[in-house]
Image (tube, rainbow, N blue to C red; front, side, top):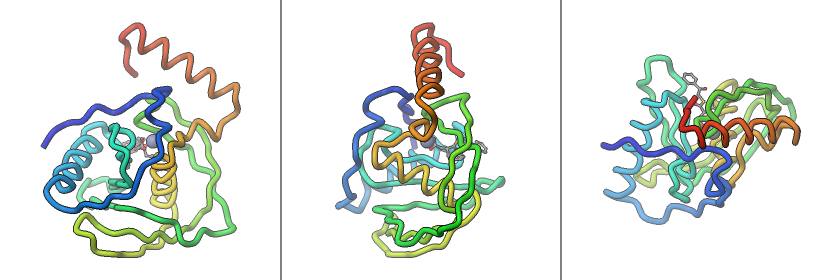
Length: 170
Ligand code: K1U
Ligand code: ZN
């Protein structure tokens, strides 16, 4: 396994739109294992392939405290979203040190396949629903700061660029 580099906002590669995964096998298995290791080490509760500069529709998530319930979503699609919304203070491994409230559907139904191309469907609420939607935004090239005001977003951009230039990391 290997630790992968996580792209940091405002890296333009975070805005690429991911393509569907079409090949299952050893390469995908290694990518999933490396993403899981990178997510756990960060530490984070989710990671989208976009964040490690792989532009394919692949997500890893583990919201447990024990870090023993890895979920792998390949080619995920949201097939239903509730009218009811929830606001959650989101964070992002690509935007270190920044947390802010984002409003999203409170409950969703997601269809995907696992890393062995086996279809499944789940209903999610709470942090899992937030995390799946946040990671699926990454696959569409969207970073959560795009939900914030232009003023906040520009402040975040300036702060992270300053940190990048001075070699400082949050
Ligand atoms: O996409 C990412 O960068 C991962 C992100 C997922 C996420 C968390 C919370 C709300 C929305 C999306 C993170 O994991 S940020 C780190 C974090 O929240 C966390 C880290 C360790 C333990 C618990 C949470
Ligand atoms: Zn993120």
